[in-house]
Length: 250
Image (cartoon, rainbow, N blue to C red; front, side):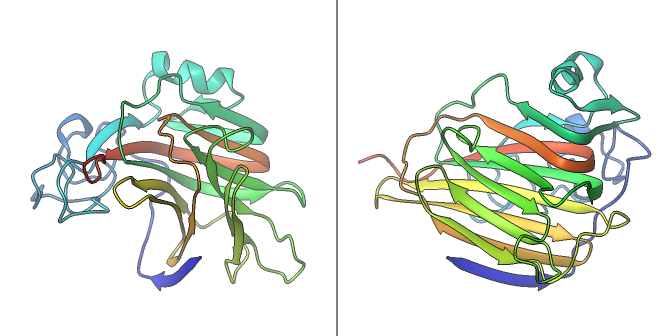
């Protein structure tokens, strides 16, 4: 397991302009980083994902595969059907809600799901907020979750797991504050050339950031993903999905 602690990140609350979420003057549809301000739109590797939001800025081939700013009633209907209350450019869970992607992403070696929340509050001791990749993280796949304090130390936790594989938990060192925005990322990457794969979970809670990685045993690339809440009040302002290539197949 790899664990990193960092500071220096901030998130915004519900967006004043859903057509330009990051407020950099470039509309979402044309912005190579629709959630991160980057007026210069610099893209060192030329893959269409700007350096400001590219987890691999020196490697080309990343693709912005899906973007949900919760401003399109037709696309948001799936979220509402899954238990999220959609309105005011947000999707809100009160209690339990789960949203699985309807379509799988095409063949890739990396799948990144990033969700931004204006507020997260636990409604019970079993409170959690999770992102799943390559499955629902219940029957198959892997997941990253913020969880209400499970070990009684007074701090909430970041949990990474693969169904049928490794699981690991690290302390956030704080309790999630409903007045503080939260960003979560679940990133599954596969290196088929070297027979390795891993899941990376990233959580930004206000200015605090924590990152952890675990190896995964499953090399299948399904390409679906999900966002779920349990015993939580969570206000999502956007969800964005990236895919990335890897080394040539053997």
